[in-house]
Image 1: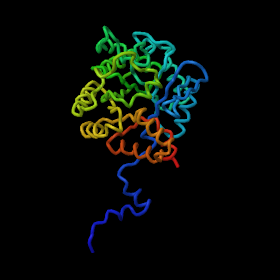
Image 2 (image 1 turned 45 degrees about the vertical axis):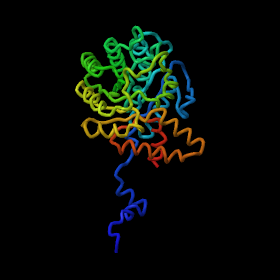
Image 3 (image 1 turned 60 degrees about the vertical axis):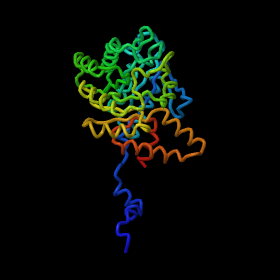
Image 4 (image 1 turned 180 degrees about the vertical axis):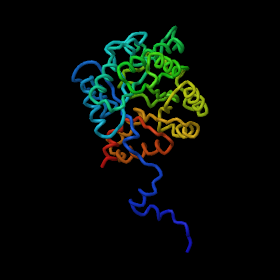
Length: 323
């Protein structure tokens, strides 16, 4: 009898649904972001990012152990220096806060992959991602500083560096510097496709990195642009990137899909702070089932083509997946 085709047959039970499921999540898919600051025994919750903290190195090590115990393979570190200046010198200081955190984590948890964000915005007094002259963010003078920062992270023991600045040519500058300094094995996860998004607001509180003047539209991508993403990714691949990242994730699933279809490298996507905080806020108000929405969002990012997901939900999602 009609209908002969009944797709509902394969939805009948949880066991059947599991067998035919097209997309699956694992803790192996996640990278967990951590914010490290100077001091001792410091753990300050970030108001706009419930469950996330600014932590001193001693507390970061404990936190990294927790992340590792959940089966999450990697963390990415963002630094909050004691002082900031025009050239962001804390970014490439051998005794900088990220450098200290990398050494401490690798000493205690050598098997955990430690990735470092390579950018200037957390370290500059003006809050921009590069050198500013006459009100303009300068591309080429910034490249040398980014390369110095990446090398300093490699010397501290980082497994991977992740340039997030969106300066043209920075992947090649970092690759050449790492190779010349004897770190050809250090991989680069490039924020190749980073949009000038309004979803970064909570992060800027967390990293204390808001621009003091102007905005980042002159170097981060314009949100309406789609084809440009392929060009940015292709340039970074040609310059030596090992992993290509799209940021943000939720509103850019089409971009993730495009990059996946046109790129043979691993594709990462950053489920950013604003995306996280919206879900946390709605969950707190009882407007949504926070856990179900969290898993649906992460699954959508994976389904769109991401191999790796940077997310503040990593620990919560891993706990559910490990049950």
